[in-house]
Amino acid sequence: MDDSLYFSEEHLAVRDMVRALARDEVAPIAAQFDESQEFPWATVKRMADLGLLGIPWSEELGGSGFDTIAYVCAIHEMAKVCASHAITISAHTTLGTSPIVHFGTAAQKEKYVPLLASGAVLGGFGLTEPGAGSDAGATQTTAVRKNGHYVLNGTKRFITHGGVGEIFVVTAVTDPSKGTKGISSFILTKDTCDLDAALRAGMGHRDGLEPMKGFRSGKKEDKLGWRASDTRELIFEDVEVPVENRLGEEGKGFINFMKTLDAGRVGVAALSLGLAEGALGEALKYSAERKQFGQPIAHFQGISFQLADMATEIEAGKHLMYHAARLSQQGKPYGKEAAIAKLFCSELAMRATTKAVQIHGGYGYTKDYPVERMMRDAKICEIGEGTSEIQRIVIARHLLKSLNA
Image (cartoon, rainbow, N blue to C red; front, top):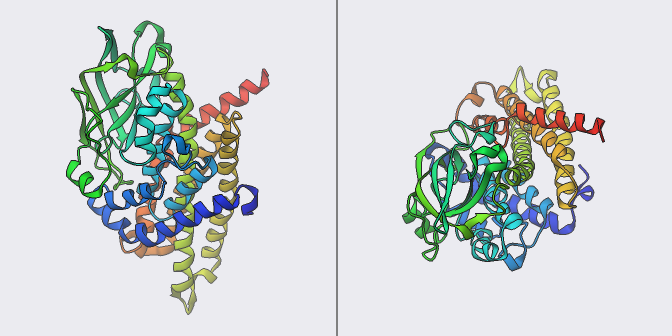
């Protein structure tokens, strides 16, 4: 891809910075944290120090003052070596912080965004529930207003940073009679579940951020991939949330979170693309070194054609993802383009990592090479932020809607 199509000199500087961090500090420990399932506080602190947890937010809000292209570029680069670190950037920024930036009051932004954008604490996004996955409108968590506050009860599931995070935006039903128009969103706070590690890292907790009684994290998921990323339940038991912590108008929670998911899909597309590109790099290197029948296996058509196919699809994915990101940056409609990029790149990640394992042969099935981890990390990209089936529904709806335009 011609860098000048999407990148300025500033973008390239961000890319090179993230590339160096990923190569020198994250790649050497990625397998270790995948195995242990521990949250990598030390390298996440390094990302925070470099401004990677607040890339698209203004300096006035504690961010880095860059833009959407720089943001997805950082995710893309990090995912080439570790998807768990990449999803930490993506989930924290798009899911945990952007709803407050886009829908919050001036007071909410002033109170919460600098803590998130600087990486002082981690954030998350509570939408999915045990009975409300693809059907997000089936939310069962309730918020009953009484005496100047809302009382929340319910459970969220598969929440990135559910344990380690301290600031969350979540949905709850405020008027059951109105369907999705009766769903509102709120800002909630709790203590990190990993307080000692957070204090050692020098990030992840702020004493002045008062936890809400009855709000806690639950079961930690034992996952196939993204194993160094913290994923847990969120549990609300008679949590009293001040009215001033409602995010946006009452009844606007569902539609606002759907807008957030459009941006999240571009982030997952960037992560998926990074996985695919990282897998291609590993497969190319291995096939040039591995000899069978007296020559490097890369010289055999059965291998070289697979490499060519991977490279071709990766180039296509770059244009789809960066095009969607540019539309978002310009304030233009991009829901269809985000769904297309997410669908294509997530399924590409699965194809590319599977081919990379095949090219490595028996070695690819061991933990001696990173392609095994990459293949496991790729699968969730076809599920999170809307499954591939949901993306096809979204794309089809846009196409049908255009007939009536």
